[in-house]
Length: 275
Length: 328
Image (cartoon, rainbow over all chains, first blue to last red; front, side, top):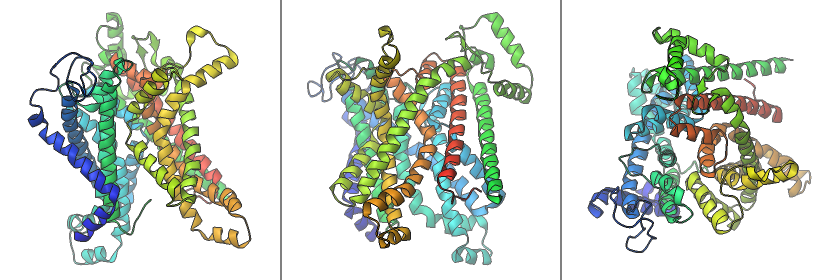
């Protein structure tokens, strides 16, 4: 653990990413304390520029942009984390089964994965939300449905490589059940690459969520960064900051997660330095 | 002879997978059609109110909505197989014609993005690899980190603010000035002028992706024995880079570019919406607003077919570029 921490800390950009990410998380958690009123509430004259009466100004309806950003952080992180968790569970299950059992099951599951990877995934997410109506649960489902294939392929590869190693053969010869071998012995050995990939998947999930809500496919009762930009875009000639500021928030959050992911990669797989 | 046979078998296998993919998509579409509020006839008619009552009755009969689900699915498959994707009342056109009319602008955008991103990715990745751990390498990897994290719609909006509104260099939206009635080269120049911002916006992420991939790939290639051999026989570094390393290193980038085609189509929805580029993506956005779900299903189906075809072409060209690739 200490070795892990020291390797992570040595990766300077990762530490920067972690600091930004912790700040965003703190804002998300403390949003109701910092700004108790609803972010949809009208507070004053529309299109007030930033750094005046309100820190980031107001949007086209006179809503406080700073409040919208705070509550948007909650939505963004929540959707990113839950959607990724579901996608990881699905991906690890499918990839693990395919890699461990091999043969026909592997062939069938991998064809399925390939098909899902070929489908234009963003269009599929749009379609799902258009049909199911965009509630927060449906947004999470749509993102999870399009995110699991890379994880399945990764886990399958790891399981395939691990399946014939001595320690697995030893488990088999001890008469251990398949479930026990998979869960207690192979899975922990693949955990580091799963964690790294999952962290990068959170970043992608946030980008997908913001694109969907930009197109108007977000829960109408929940504030989100993409929604502010989508709603503010008609007034971009006069009030460009309404679009600019939430975009910077998305950029910083996604970048911090990517940096943390790379730091984790260096710290967890010290021998496997990708780039 | 055996190689040719193997090649044919490979093509047949990829083709079969493509057909299965399209079948899965049709079934998905069918399920979604039934998940949507109202019955399938409502959805097919573009939601309540748009169609005449007699057409609705006709639709319900045509679809046999009183029949069991598998009979309906069979009928649906048969119609899709003949590219009968229904009728859009919002646009007063058949869905197939509507989509074919919007395909051109999207393909133009995609091809431009493909050329820009693969071209600059290969060039910049080579620069980064040949300046390993020096300032060009560090600068490029910092830019890549930024490009990875930038939401594409936001990049587009900011490009409009800076280059269209503040500087006035490029038009804010559309594909051409229709009122100008340009013809010939004047029209080509006008479209190219409108294409600059959307193409660059959509390319941003892919340039970053291919740059990193190319960098890693070039580094891999320089570690190979054949580079040592080339040096030993007295080739200059320039010759080694151009004739040997770059050709081999570019292959993974090309494969990746093929794999990313589906993602590129998704990005096109957002970019076309931002820039009012009249392609499939903007059509998807418009149908989203008009609640024309049948049109959306049609766009999804045609895009998926497009992706399958492109993947097949990439597979084939890849094996042509590098004959050593196992065609199994």
